[in-house]
Image: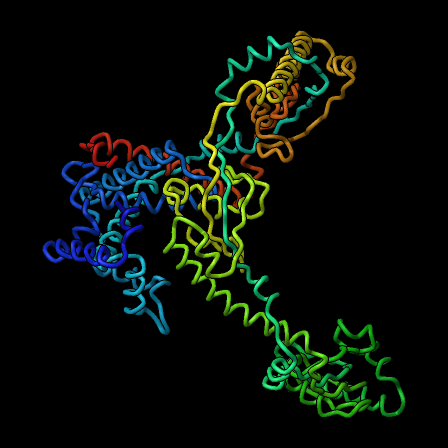
Length: 639
């Protein structure tokens, strides 16, 4: 129906549709169409209903958040069903908590609610809370004042209850010591890695290949793929095509000639006598007298640069004879700048006071201000002109492209004719964004390509700006549904899988043999030597483990303590790459709370209480939900 309207909504047909739609709006009101399912419940908690409209609103928000995380990968049906259940469970838990809070006598008063709203950053303007900003935000988010305030009141009540329940958890001294003993425990061990690559397997037979393929046929499929046709508008391409003659550029240059003036620059040096942070009159006078004495020495022939090295309190310039380099107006503090720009070359100032102390300033050279000629800055003027014009043309073309491709959703031809663009094609693209084409592989492009509007309905996409200054409109063609591969197509992968399985089996068998030798008492160094390997020793490793894999670290800390007399314990782990790693555990050192500072102990206690509080709160929610009469309307949820 919607596609029919889109294809035919012109002329008298469009007016007829508008009139037909207007009649029920006039009789029953637009609200019945904006939220037609607002009175349908998807679940009840005791006598309270969770409405379809509220559920759908929260579900749509969470789905949008999830899609933004996944990027080009489309949310599958199974993920979508799980998301719906998670959203509904969260709404049921929330309703259970609200009712529990009310039963316990908790309330959020109007004054408290208003105070919280007035302090939100989004509602501030100028000197404080702005009613206009508040109402504007509500409109932008699609909230009514009453609905938003009721949602906020419920959220605050739920938060009160959560804080009250989880805040009841506390950690005793013995629990803290036990936690420290486990959490700060370190282990000393050695590793012996047996590489899977050492075990080779000859090419499998045809019988083995066929049997393996039949057993794993479902794993060998060609993914769904498609190609795209697209129109692109590029800001860089537009700018490159813009031409301008010298007359136009010269007019621009003259209109903005003040921008091309090189300001006066002065090369300066100084000698600084610094002052304390809060100087008294005597401090100021003594510092000035010291600087005057230095100036007198320069007057009788001593070099400014030598005295700067000897006496300046500025560590950044003293070693270089006080040289600060070239300065422009606005670079230095006002007192320094005023004195420096009043001096002639090779002239030395009287003592100048600034926030840093007292200065003697010397100007060694002056570069006068000058305006650039048109010829000197022609390329810059041209680039700025092209950029400005390109931005204007780009916006106009994008708007035209959006309108034309929407009005003609069945093809890109109209857009290409209107804007003089070339319809381009991409290489094959999969749903997860895999493509060797630089346009098709963009996450936003891939997401649009596999959307129902583009792939299923055959429409042009909306304009997609996949990077600044580059916009495309795409449409799907040459669609290849997912399909099962035959044996010839899957042969290389089947052979690789068989060889990997064979290597894995061989390395596991050898690893287990060596483990048995070690556990039976054979010398660990002798075992390693026979294999041409060496043990790698790790001392006092904690549960974070640094460079060790999570899988290996978990196995190390799962092993029992060394036996009587410190006899090592042995275990084996298959690493992700297929290597078999033998672990020789030689020492376990428990954490000790006495080794922790007061701050560390306090932080750990707070973390444990927070963890325990979450556990208590989750248990509270489960118990309250079990005691509530919760009913889910599956038929309404799916509709």
